[in-house]
Image (cartoon, rainbow, N blue to C red; front, top):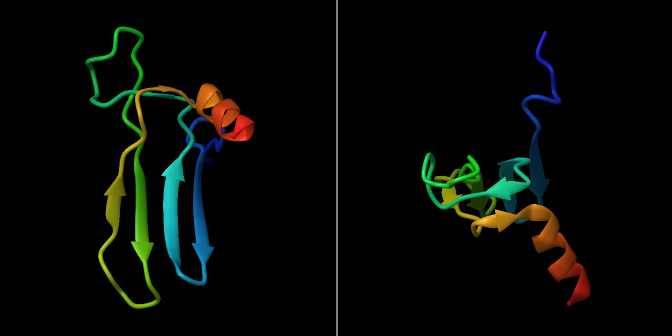
Length: 74
């Protein structure tokens, strides 16, 4: 049985595309380079309603909690 708490992810399907992501609260640009062990975010998007390739997306290095607070403040 797979424990969802250890492998949190989401697939969001909309009328104009799909986004898949895992939930990393602390992100880094590259694996193995951050002093606290942060990892790159793995997000992908497929735009449009036809079978097009997924595009890899990158998050900034830092805290997802901070990113959410900054977005809320805006």
